[in-house]
Length: 462
Image 1 (cartoon, rainbow, N blue to C red):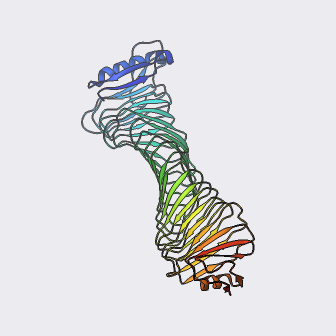
Image 2: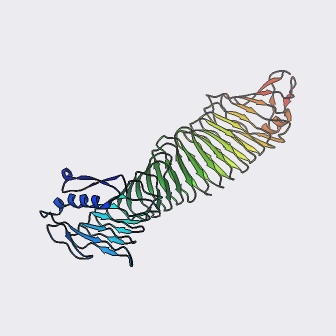
């Protein structure tokens, strides 16, 4: 514990004592004992008691252990015992009472059980600390474990090792001065985690409410109906199981990786966030911020809401629902359905068939790509945008344009042949301009401009 400092109670806040733990723990131990005399009573002589025996009133009472060989000790503080001080070398068990506020362990593999607001000094490493109430814990190297069972609080100070905090139930608070792993297994747990950078959080319970601060955390959600709030930059959040999760990053950028199938989640992310969906049948809703979304699964749905989003499809089918934010969609090999909202939508089709429903509001741009089947549908009166739809006549074998509702759209269709347009509109419309490359005709009060088609003067589309 060389170089580690600790603040111990000494009978009121004005009597607190800060000690330094050097190579010789005995000096630090003596300081710790002296700091507790005023709290214990008027006597200045420490009272040594055996395990399980009650202490004397007015004295500082402690249970010692110096066993170095043989059988490990089971040390238990009786009523009125303020400390357990273990200078032995075995993997001992130290169990406090309601009066025990100081634990000092020495060997590796000790087990420490608190029952009051306590300060704990671990041994040589790989210790287990079971916290009841509140504890300030100093641990050394090795795989240390701290267990919280509900309504508990732990502060991990010092250097620690590859430590793990396990939360099984209740509302708990964890503060760590070094990177650690926190695992939450209890359901409906409400936990606040203030962690050092590059820590790991694993939420296995359902309907947990977890708040995590600290930068560059890795957080995994495996249960259902969890609520996660983060406040650090550069976090990576993994949804590995369950559905119905709600994630908010406090306006900061994050990376979200979704590998759980049939997950229905809401993501409130900061600017320049990244979302990757690799499972099937997921339904993801974005709220605010901006995100680059890549969906490589099948039958996924992405609702962009108020977010400014760029969505890229993969080999599987995908359904995109735009909102008030700007939407950019690039289709992959899978079939795609894109429904634009009031925000401007830019849609680029791929190899798979694509169905685009343009929105009322923004200026929508649509390029069909090489899809064999293209369906274009109007979504209502659009008085704000002049929409542009581009088809590839040489590769698109079926182009369907459903009649638009009466609006004021100006719609440019490039690459579509007369036959395709005629089959799509299923009605007679007179071409108003001549045999120029650009020809204009109307459907209701919507105006269509056809560029590059084989239209001739006085041609009637039937």
